[in-house]
Each structure stands twice: as structure tokens, then as C-alpha cells.
Length: 441
Image (cartoon, rainbow, N blue to C red; front, top):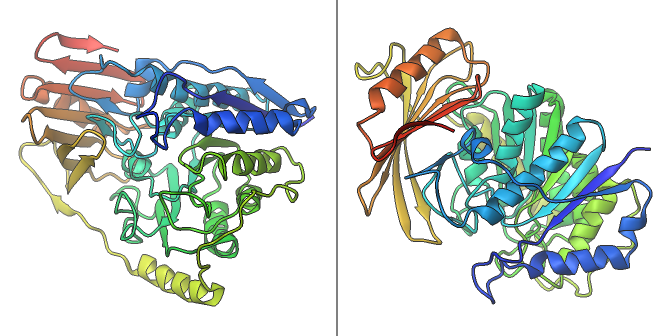
């Protein structure tokens, strides 16, 4: 029997406030709905218990600055670890697909982490992806992000990785946080066109989303031929969501899932706690389990104006042209202070809205036609002046990029507040700071 895995982690002891939309009730109503509908009694459903990600599994993917020894990470580690639990079940062929219903969410958390932003501290999907690549040798992964907000953190982590196709369809960043995710954001110099952003106008509903999937996204997936497809399953496109302005229904989400056919889905946003989440989650999981979701209907009816479908088709046609004509947005230099080769330079700024932190970044990527290229990220906390560096040696690194990463590690120790070496090709993590020197983690 083809089995579908399910895992709940409501994170009872973590919230941003009793009345904040990101609180444990987001999943409690869903659990109740699943049990009332008898979903857990379906013969193909297998329930899993939460797990705990290690700091090593986090640092393989993200740099925690100023130190990996940060307080209050437990809920985030369990959310990421729970995604890994279902990923392990999939990789070991215990399940055909699975849905990790976890919080806190993660897709706004990027390559460097100085705090919480967009309700996110650790990136659950990215940590899951790199765990599966490391342990099972999975080569090509596609992430389809259906959250209403652009998954800028996931994009940041994989922007220079030619083996990961990141697709995000979201409400236009000119109208919604985080203000990014435009068609010209297509990937770095070694991974150009491995990022696809589709910013949508407010009011887009089921028909529009399904059209974009069938007309644009699914052909890209077929062309890329991934070994693993992950749905970053944000549900705030729903017509009752208080933080956005889209018009997707619960059954519309079921159809999204049916079209994408993800191997794994991981919950992201969605803040209409009673009116949407129990029904959207139900429709998504029924679609994963191969069950009929046509009877799933939320108690309210759409009140927002629905964008005309013909207008949307014209809009998407223009988006495609803009995407095709987009030019690279980096400067290529040969810098004497860096190891030999040509390096792309991309200045970058990150605002942590939850904590009011401004991070100033200088990203450099070694141009390479053999691997993803060594990445150097120099980061500064604008208020405290603390300076950090992330050095990443990519999966399947060539010998030249490996040497470049090792040379940078030797050079940068002592020059910053803290430095992280992220050697993904050997699964080696080393951390240096002014207090403890070098640690292997």
C-alpha cells in the first residue's frame, strides 16, 4: 500500500504573543479536524512523532551568529527535526509522501541568522534538503513555495546552488512583506535560472493559481527532473487570511497539491486559524493521500474581489517576458584579497522585523563551471558593529573551490567576531570566535 505520513508539532511553549497570529492554535484546530473527519483512521496514513534537529544539521545549511549557542532554539530545532523525521521516512521508502504540520515556520530564515524575521529563525525545508543530500546522496531537489509571502530565506540559501530549483509563487512584493521575489531574481552566476519567482497581483484565486502551475511551473519541473519535490506549504493565499489579499479556497489548495505531487510538504504560513487552516490542511493531506477532497468546504464564502482570469493571463504573459529578458545583477571581479579566480560580488541587506536588526552583507561567489562555487558572505550587525563571515564549500565541490574555501577559512579567523566554515561536500562544520577559538560542530 502507498502510504502518506503525517506529523503534528504545535509548539505549545513557543509563540510571539497570546493574540499573535503565529501561535499554537494554528495547528490545534487542524488536529481536531483531522480526527473528526477520520483521517487518522485511513489505512494508508501513518503518523509520526516529532524529532529534534542537531546544531550540526542546522549549521550545515545556516550560519547562526554571533554564536551557535543561542537560547530559545528548542521549538525551532523540533520543527526542523520533525521535517527530517518525515524526510527519513520518505528516503527509507516507508511512505510515498508526507506532510509535516509544524511550527514555527522557516522560509524567511536565510543563509545567515542574526535573529527572528517573518516569524522564522531556522529554515525547516532547507535543513531537511541538505540532510537528505548528505545522508542519502540525493542530487536534484525542487522546492515549490506556495506561501503568499516570498520565501526570501529559502531563496537566499540556495541562490548559488545549481542542484536546487527554487520556485515561489506569491503575492507581489510591492504589496506585501518581505518586498522581494521579482522575476529578475533568477539565481547566482553558477545557478542562473535555477530560481523562478512569480509575483501575483492581489485577488488571484484558484483558477489563476492552477493556470500558472500548469502553464509555467510544471513544465519547469519536468525540464529540471528533480529526484525530490518539496512543497513549502504556506496557506495564507486563502481568502480569509488576515495578512494577505488573495482568493484561494481550501479545495483550490487541494488541487495545487494534486498538480505539484510533492514528495514532502512542510507547513509554512497561514493565519486564518479557525476559518481556513483546518480545511486547507485537510484538503492538502487528502490530496497527498489520494483521497477525494471535493467535499472540503470552509464555513465562509469569499468576500474579496476576484481578479479577472483573462487579465491574469495577460499579466502572466508579461511576467514570462520579463523573466526571460532579465539580466544578471552582480559585478564580476578578480580580487587580490581573495583566492585565485573570478568572483561575483552581490551586496545584500537583511532586515529582521521581529527584533529590529539590520544586517549588512557582502556576498562573493567564485565563478566555477564544475561545481556550485565557493561562497563567502561577510556580514555585519548594523547596531552593534559585530562582524561575521560564512564560508561555504558546496556539495560536490571541485578541488579548486575546496582549496579556495580552506584558504578563506585560514585567512578570516581572527578578522571577525565569528567565522563559520560550512564544508557541505565533506559534512564538516567548524566555528571560530574570539572567546573560544576553533570548534568542530
